[in-house]
Length: 131
Image 1 (cartoon, rainbow, N blue to C red):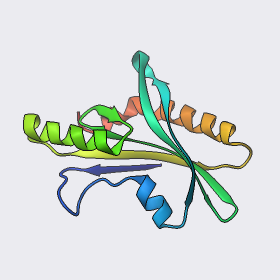
Image 2: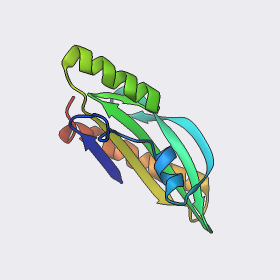
Image 3: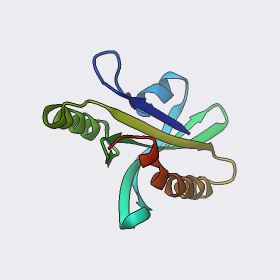
Image 4: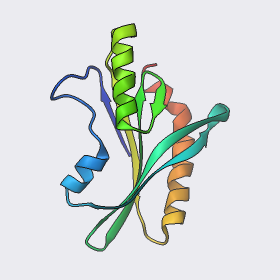
């Protein structure tokens, strides 16, 4: 689990995509999709589903961004939300949320475990991240 929160974003101190940092640390991307996850309250969030491999290890990564209560999967949408909130609310804070697990049996089983974890943790995010 990784939850990175930036109280203020500016050049040199901004959220950056796992699509950039994971390959930069030796992980080879195998698949990249966006998937819906139903969460508490009848809502659905859309998260990035990123399958990577290093040597004989495979890892499944789910990640998304939160900009003052708005959950978005994409880097461009996160940046747009930050700009909008900077203008409207004079705030540039945001978070990157990432959960990952080694693929030991199957990608589908690993995905199911990660989705269940996201569904369990999602209702508690408001306790740690500002709206």
